[in-house]
Length: 158
Image (cartoon, rainbow, N blue to C red; front, top):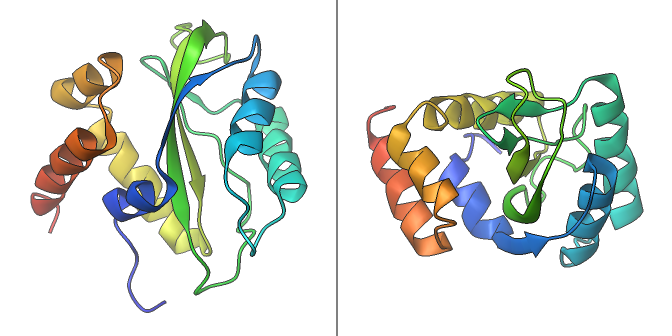
């Protein structure tokens, strides 16, 4: 891959999942990863193990009701189908976020390079400071509405 993909492209590929159940981060991640379609480049058990290991190192709750679970290291080969999944939880969960707020929205990121991972995290960081983005998440916006908003914001990042 010569050029990093934008967050909107990753979310478009991964999709949105609603009403993910669980009483704690581990249960939520088991439910979410178990709901994903099979990706030939990464078995679900490997993905779950890598994401849980990363959570054990340091919880990925970034505040404002959002967590960004991800493996510590890339699990898929460059050129493989990278993706991000937006998940709305059925009930808020304590994710040990710095702001103490329970998490009701996840952005699971699976990338093939550290550089792509940092690009996605940077875009998420920017978006999470936008009131309109946070409003869309609180309203549990659909894929089309979110992608339109993110792509409009991306035009400012060139």
